[in-house]
Amino acid sequence: MTLFVAGHAAAVACGSAETAGTACTLNGTGSITAGALGLTSATTLAWVTTLSGLDQQLTVTTTAQQSYLVDDATGSGAGWHVTVSATTFTNGTATLANSGTFSTNGSTSSETATTAPTAACSSGATCVLPTDVTTYPANITTAASSPTAVDTYDTSASTGMGSITIGVGASPVGWWLNIPAKALAGTYTSAVTVEIISGP
Image 1: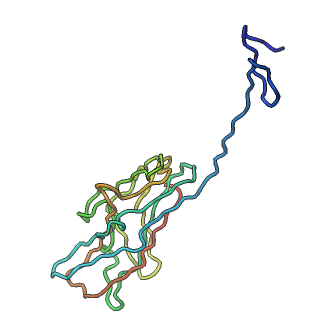
Image 2 (image 1 turned 120 degrees about the vertical axis):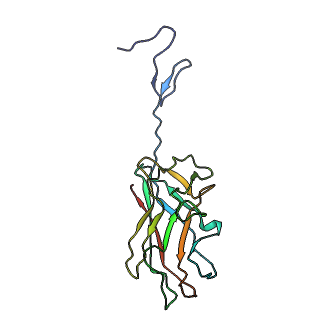
């Protein structure tokens, strides 16, 4: 039995010609396919100093090296974390200590700062800003081979969705290198590996 409200005909399924005054209904379906989780970082990290006879704490000074871009287009809300590992800093003959040499935080003015890098939605993205649960500074112990990866930015689930720049405004990404007063002069290099992994 079909019921009619006085003055209005009941809606019917669309798809055929309807007379004036007769409403029809149809289904609207939006299909959203999961995208990728990705990270875009600087191509190099560079520190420059002159030995002074004192221990020195160096940070990168190039703006492009003080941030990185995370794109979480997975639509999963799983969260993500960024890890960093690095081989021993060596100039070919001399090395810097594996422990206490390399670290990162959200400051380019203090190696011991406990602040996190500031996160901001990229232009054109209505993102969910990440809730970072990392303890800073994050100390990265280097090794000649098979160095251990360390969490340097760790988001909670249901945060960090969309396109997000890490290290903007007042709290850029600080990459710190400790140079002891006894260090030998030379150009020291390390293979720094940065990776983004799904899940907090």
